[in-house]
Image (cartoon, rainbow, N blue to C red; front, top):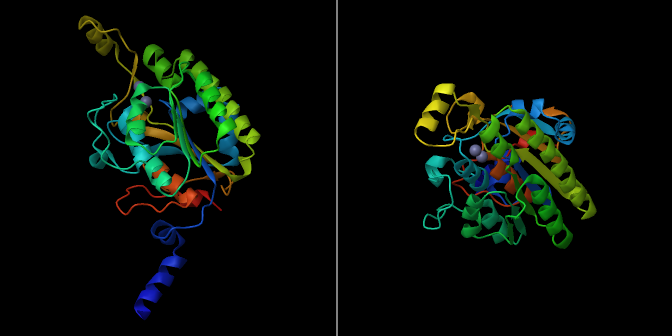
Length: 307
Ligand SMILES: [Zn+2]
Ligand SMILES: [Zn+2]
């Protein structure tokens, strides 16, 4: 028994372990995860995104977080929103398939089990995978699924409810990156529009009166690269429309993602040097909300980013 008490104290002093194994008091009442689809760190640097960059300056960030492989939208977001790698969640496909449900719980289900409110606004039908899993009080794919419509839908939800866990997905950079190239002017414009949409969301959070108790995570599912001319010629010869931009590989420009955290209790102007992997977003969100992490979680909260 005494040994056990000693062990418990050892755990409590190693605060990271304590917060993983014991239900802790929440550090934030609201966590927003905002995913910019196909937004590589180099894209963020090049695009006109004043609000995103001000949140980097006033928050904690790393420009070298990593997604999983294959670096595709549904597998990557599944890691982001379940806290495990693809070897565990086994979502190897990239479209919604009602016959192949998730076999691991989402962070929405885990938050819901603790009585917390949850919401998702996304711009692609494949996110129905998470709706199907349950745990989402509100799930919206707006008919205007570009970032302006996404932000408007999120702001509308915040007028009626203030979920503890809110996931928002901007598809625009991915749509333009595929069509025009991953570093194209069209994609830069899309990213600038996403920054304006981010402002709408920030204002909605302010208007809901929850800004002081919120943490916002800004990240991406993957980056991307342009196909070679030979690859494009091959696509056309096989009767496909040429898509300049692509992703899915383990190459650096596909797998390196931004990871930014801003808000309550976040260190200001801090550069995260600990490794951050896609599934750490899930762990950080639950840790902030005081939801105990399941033992089989792969993700770990990015504790160094917080005071
Ligand atoms: Zn994507
Ligand atoms: Zn894509």
